[in-house]
Length: 79
Image 1 (cartoon, helix red, strand yellow):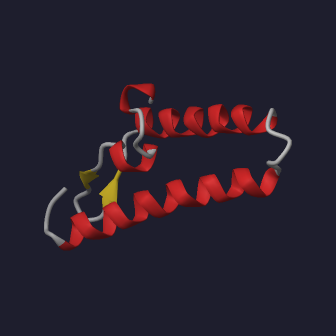
Image 2: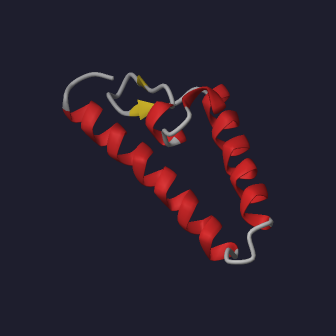
């Protein structure tokens, strides 16, 4: 998602409400997220200061961003 330089992928993934009010993301957004994770790992692979823990931390940060948005938006009554 290089169109959004400086933002976390989790901050710009589109969300929509499901019939039960829970947040969901389209399959195309899942694909973009996975590609962003892969791209991030490629970047970390060349950094001798980084290891798999660094990659895991980056994935956790994205997951946190998505989870926070989903909680906030479903509590606000709309996505």
